[in-house]
Length: 399
Ligand SMILES: Cc1cc2nc3c(=O)[nH]c(=O)nc-3n(C[C@H](O)[C@H](O)[C@H](O)COP(=O)(O)OP(=O)(O)OC[C@H]3O[C@@H](n4cnc5c(N)ncnc54)[C@H](O)[C@@H]3O)c2cc1C
Image (cartoon, rainbow, N blue to C red):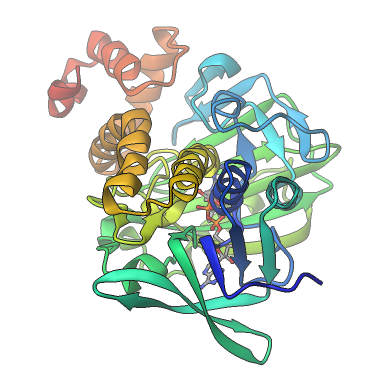
């Protein structure tokens, strides 16, 4: 076991994709880096549909690896409540479709890459608070088995996911509104007979109020099947399970599938945070609400943001400059690449969530009819406008 120091240039809290990629690029760029993870097994349990596109991987510095790449799909089917079906090719299926991965192995591989780059890693290490001096975050309080201790850092990176507390402890506003929280749950089912070449998304208030059910084919006869519902549209968190179980029961291809696991979790569907950087602190990935508000896909964005954060922190360590001005390069960098899309998709989600099932049918029907291949908000609105202009009057400002 390594002997840990008392002080690092960079301490990253959370070894999800965002945290590990931050740690990797910080270490590669010369920062003495420590990655802290509260779980005992990085990547487990899996809380994810395991859908990922190759589109942004290169930008995030990640190469496809057969250890976690389980199935390549041709594209996605989107199915409306009344059974209208829109098929989207892989090239245009947004940033969540293309590959179905083994998420636990993916997360472990990224942590492994961080270690290879020189980052230290401590598992079963829960950060319970941040330390501060003169208004700046100076480190973290850690519980590691029975030990409790403080560690110092030039910058603390909160990559602690949807339930992030580190950002709040550091004084950043990470609050979510009820309408911006999705309750999700997912099974990995084996013994199912789904199309191995297509991911499927089922829409409708009967199926998943304010969200969707996904069916993502994995290798062999296994699939990742899950649901996201808008928390404020259901009575209790447990309702997501009722909706998903009913969906599975009604589909003869999957109803006899055997669960390998099931896990529940939350996803934010919010606009980007106003601030993701403060003195001595940065927020990355779900902690920074960088997840796509329409699809709930956040792996790629967490990795992209992590690379930018790591590079900025490497430069800070090289120059010994952890000032707010230096850290703000991360804020400017990730916003330039992601903010417009995240904001636009959040506005679209707000309006889509108000549509009734009949309107969703018309929407999917018009898209299929117009041969829309590209899952961009703009392409969708233009196609719908041609057939049902009344449906897009609320969205005129997008076109
Ligand atoms: C059910 C579900 C399905 C999803 N499906 C998809 C999908 O198909 N495709 C996709 O792209 N995205 C999907 N997402 C979203 C995706 O999982 C996240 O966007 C992604 O994991 C974000 O990565 P992250 O590194 O920011 O956070 P996380 O992956 O959540 O990692 C945060 C890490 O921080 C650790 N941690 C938290 N608090 C502390 C602490 N105090 N001290 C130490 N460690 C701490 C946690 O244990 C965790 O390991 C899904 C999410 C859910 C819930």
